[in-house]
Length: 401
Ligand code: ASP
Image (cartoon, protein in one colour):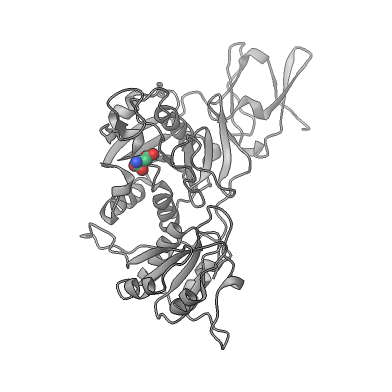
């Protein structure tokens, strides 16, 4: 760097959200030469205290003083294991949601020097019980906080956290604002409960300027993941969210470390919801998921198809189903998404079955989306009255279609 700023070493104090680890410091003639390996040095800000007749200065022009306001973070509580209590400290199953967001916040270290917090309890349920009414509340809670906060944290049960995160990523233009989902695998009463640390880290993620421009994030077990892609892969372990496309960064000693610069999920189609002021729920079209298995009876298709606006099928492997089930599905008039049972990987369009004249009729490949995310995406497409070709185009964003 051609003209590094020089001052005495003891007087340099980085503002909390810029880590000293991004700096290269060398002493030159009793002064400190500051260079940086941080790519966004243009926006780097430091406070140089005026202890020795020096005046406050800054690296890049705009003077920065110590009394800047802290980021404002909104916490939305919805329940889950993170808000649950068992009857003793060894119980890690069969517990109940019984803790308010206020009580949860009481369990984390003081963060008053990091951010200003506001919180709201939207609901307090196990995430298996989350319905469209509650999803609507979460959507409203998020959209109403976008303008007035610097970050949003949503506490949520891990079982369906990825569905809500996917829905919010698909329906909210988050701009630069970090929205961080957080849950836990152990109830608050258990030995080594993971909730307080996960929540603490979620708040630090939301308050960190490096989290901006990354869309929906998830904080669990020291990992920072992408809400769009994350999946619960283990029903019990603390490291439950774990898919190849998921991890964006991690935490060490409560410092946020991202592996990549800010980026949003590739191919994520954004829907603009138009809701009447009187609306109290989403009322999305109905889509159900069938699960493929050896000897799956083709009649199951007839039993459900008439009752739904669309179907998703969790195929075996990358789109494979018995011939007689494919034939049934090819004959349907409603859209059918071919997804997969496997946690990872994808269903390519090349694997869709075809009629004798080479048509896939209304079958669509899910690409990288698992059945539950495919379901939400299809519901949103149907709610927007997308035609079959448009639905294919939306799924093509994730290499399906
Ligand atoms: N039963 C919980 C839920 O609400 C599981 C969890 O949060 O880990 O999804």
